[in-house]
Image (cartoon, rainbow, N blue to C red):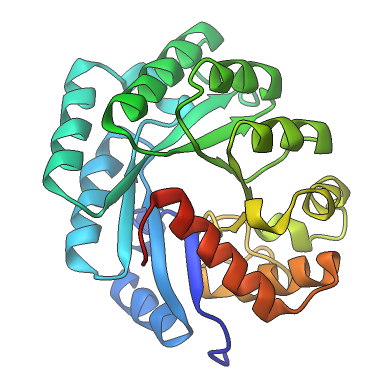
Length: 261
């Protein structure tokens, strides 16, 4: 792949066991292909320590630590204390995440449990003065309501799946809209409309690797250098150059975290 972009992947899961056999090779390959920054987002309890470790092993990997709504039953004071410990001892932990609400899976924890854990982690982000990475699946109204309860917290609505109206509300609150490979899918009208509507200075690009690879790699294991396809699709939708999109989304992330990468 031609190294034509400076790629920031603002959401990936290289701690996933699907990379256990070739993680070192994959991470070398994506660096060769223009990936200069990855935000590895923890989801369950085990991935908090794994993510912290990855940030120490690789210069270009940074971390977000949190408990995903599907694992909300695992969040407790011990987990919270561990997150605080890692944040205070590792300057490469940049955010609290992946946190939020997921009403899609019936086997997920009770909605009330998810909401309590989401609020606890939003409060943690507020106290630590860190942005958040929010997972929202089939829970737009409740997600927005909780976001509004914490007006000083900013962050990313990851893998955005809501309407244009919902995206406008998120942007009003100071959030960024995370765009994945879904934007390249033929049936992706909703996210295409969102990308058209949201100002360029409020968009971020992400893979959610190993999931949701963009066309033409749809169905394969995703990796960060595939962001080039997402950048090009956004450029087409916005009718601007891909270079302008690339520079803008990278600058957006640096503005969110308040530092240059």
